[in-house]
Every structure is written in C-alpha cells, then in structure tokens.
Image (cartoon, rainbow, N blue to C red; front, side, top):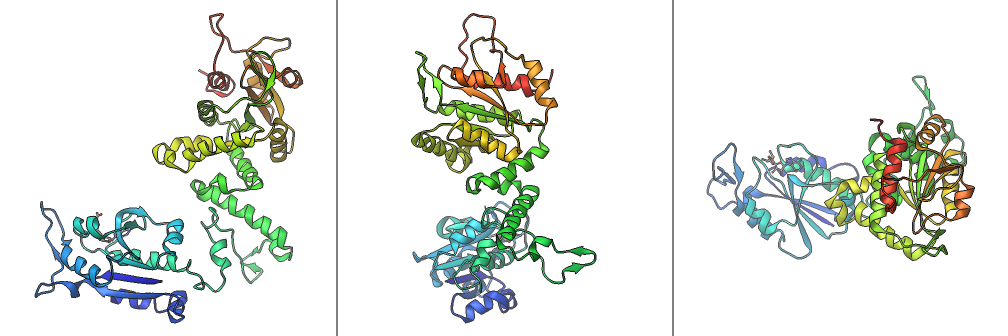
Length: 432
Ligand SMILES: C[S@@+](CC[C@H](N)C(=O)[O-])C[C@H]1O[C@@H](n2cnc3c(N)ncnc32)[C@H](O)[C@@H]1O
C-alpha cells in the first residue's frame, strides 16, 4: 500500500515515521510513504503557494495550481488512487474509515495550511475530506500522521500479532477492557485476581464484561446492540436499569397467540407504525425493554429490516431519535422466551400484567397498579395484544388484568399504539 503526502513541510514526517511499527512495515515492503513539497510545483519565480482570499478576510489561501500540478504528478487522477483532503470540515475519521481505507492501493493526502485550500481543488480532485476532530490544527500534517498510522495498523502483517487489531478499542464496537502487567502489586493496588487464575474462559468473560461496563460509562453512543450477544445485552440492560426510574417495567407487543374477529387463535402481522410508536412511547416512559413477540421467521426478518433502516440505514441519517427508541426493542420468538430472557436478566420471573379492551372480573385500576410497580423492585411485564386481543388463557393466567381504557363514548376501538401510550402515561407518566 502506498501513502503519498502533499505538504509544505515534508520534513515534519521524517522523524514521525522513522521509528516504531510504521518504519518496520516500510522496511518489510508492506507499505511506502512518500512526501512531496507542494512548493516545488509552483510556477511562480518566488515559489509562492498562497494568496489573499477573494472577498476579503483574514489570512491566506493555498493557490490551486501548485496543488493540481502536484496531484497530476503523483497519480492523483489515476483510478486506483484515492485523494484525501485533511480539513476540519471533513467527515470525522474513525476506526471504520481506517479499516475501509486500508483496502485501497494508494492514498494521497493533501495537507492544508493557512486558511485552507482553494475550493476548486476539492470540487475537481478530492474524493474524501477527513477531519480528525472538532478543533482546528495549524496544518493537515498532524491529521495525516494520525490517519496514516491508524490505517497502516489494518494492513496485514504490519502488526506483529493480527489479533491486536481485533481486540482493540472500537473494533468490536466496544472500548477495550483494562490492561495490567507486572508488578502484581503497585502502590497499594493489585491486579484483579481473575487475570492470575489461568482460566482463559473466565478471563475472556471478565474482559467482555469490563469492556461493556467501560463503554457504557464512557462512550454509550458506541454501543450498537445489533452486534452484541444476548448476554452482553443483558449486561447493558442491567447497567441501564441501575440508572433508570421505571426500570422494572418491561413491555411486549404480542402477535401470537391472539384472537381474530371470529375469536379464532391466530398470528397477526407486524404493523410498522405500531412497532415504531410503541418503541417511542416505551423510551419516553423509561421502560426497561420492549419485546416484539412473533414466532414467524419471515415476519421477524421483515421487522428487523425496518428496525435496521432506522438504526443504521438511511432512516438513521434522517431521524436519529428513532434509533434511540429502538435501542430497547427486541424481537422474541414467544411469550415464554420473553419471560425467560427477563428472568435471566433480573434473576426473578416477571409478574405479568395484561391489557384488554373488554371488562372481566378481578381487574386492577391504574393507580393501584402504578403503586404496585413503584413499590416492588421485582420486574413486571406489561402485555399488549394485537388483532382482537390476547387469548383467554393469557388473560386468566396473568397476575394483573388492567381495566380497559375507556372514553366518553360507547365506541371503543383504540389502536394498540394509542392504548399503549395512554396506559404507559397512567403507569409511569409524570403526575400532573
Ligand atoms: C488553520 S487550518 C484552516 C482552518 C479553516 N480556515 C477553517 O476554519 O475551517 C489549516 C489546515 O489544517 C488542517 N486541519 C485543521 N484542523 C483539522 C482537523 N481537525 N482535521 C483535519 N485537518 C485539519 C487542514 O488541512 C486545514 O486546511
């Protein structure tokens, strides 16, 4: 892989890349780093490379002709090169970008100075603008050094031990676990005992747990539930619950077993708007998790695609709050599975609360239910039915059966998402 740097200060790179991992990789022929002085491409007899900005203002701007000439000379217009401009206005560099860039044959970096470079270079030659953070450096050289170092680590063979990149912070979407080395005792603190146990399975589990705890505490934005395993999700959830008010209330939208109009037991289809709206309500009222119960794999795939659209895809770029609401939403195969997952997390089986549009004997009012949930630290699972409601067996087997939500009319056909919002507000909303 070839790194080419266009700069006004090539000497800055000499010492930086003449030691450590990068210098060894250059010696081994795994990569090459060449610098070119933009000033050498100036046609001006005084080798001028900057000029005053059109429209006035402070500082100087780098002229386009020397940069264009340098780019043409180093192959910047070739198909196999990617031209990167270092700029505070660029996309913020991260590990994902580093990994992607390591797959290219040749990267050419343009290091700006002064007030930056003439805009027309960006329009005509630049493939990607990168920033290394929301602060202003006096030159792109510092940014180029950081980016090259990070990209090079992904080139096979550059790091002695290939596992190093896999284990490191960000690679798994998590920060790295804490590391210790000799001595065992340092200024009164000792190395965690488990690391001395020699039990590799236990050490791996401990490290994973610490990684999650550290990421949760320092960079919760990095936690991507889609790549976490169920046990990790449980860890994240229990950490979250420690901080949340309505942390012992779980909710589920049940698509099977429910009744249809004729009171046959059926499976209903997912309804996009119900899923998204109940997820938002759940997030608003601080429920621990929202489960979508459906036994059919195709239906699960469908709703997963919808959720990914809002958590990762175009939808996320458009509306980031949907992602936040869906962070607590999981797909579950059956009601029993849902109950078991909660039991595994909480260490105790949740009490079941059902909701129904019909009256039956022994129903619980909202105030009483609210107080019960608030005063009992154990988990509760509140079920919402789809179709014509939850089947008799679920209703009769529940610990609590909430009274129906009623209005002033005999007409009573609320959508499940409306009922869910009203019920959550009564059980967890701010008392006004
Ligand atoms: C003083 S800065 C120019 C700042 C520019 N006037 C602005 O306000 O956006 C000079 C050069 O440093 C580089 N630079 C500054 N901050 C950077 C950052 N956060 N990431 C990448 N490059 C940066 C760019 O190449 C930039 O052209």
